[in-house]
Amino acid sequence: MSSTRRDFARSLAIAGALARVTVPLAAADILAQTPPTPVPPPVGKALTEVVRASYAQHLDDAELARIDKDFQDYASMLVRFRKFELANADEPDFTFASLTERWT
Image 1 (cartoon, rainbow, N blue to C red):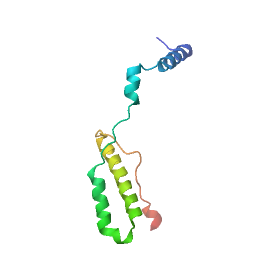
Image 2: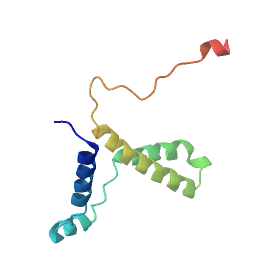
Image 3: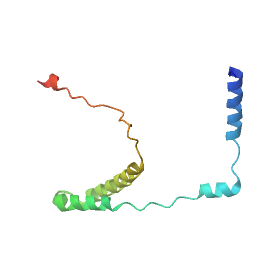
Image 4: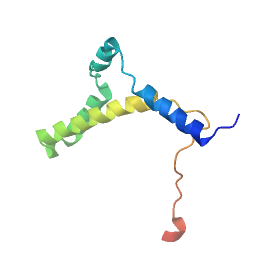
C-alpha cells in the first residue's frame, strides 16, 4: 500500500484533532499539582564546606552563599545525569583533536 500526500495530510489533520482532545477533570487536577521539591544531594554542601575551609578568608558571606547555591544546583543536575543510562556503543557528540603541529 503506497501512501500519497493526501493520506499524509489526512493523518496530520487527525493527529492535530486528537491533540486538541481535552484532559478529563480528575487527570487535569493531578497534572496541576506541583511536584515536591527534591532534596539537594549532600555533595553540594560538602563541596561548599571544602571551599569555605580553603578560601573563606578571601570570600565574603554573599559570595559563599552564591557558591553554595551553585553547588546545590549543579549537584541536583549531576544526579539527573547519573540516572541517564548509556549503551556500550554510545559515543560522544564530538571528538577532541589537539593542534600539536600548530604549536611546534
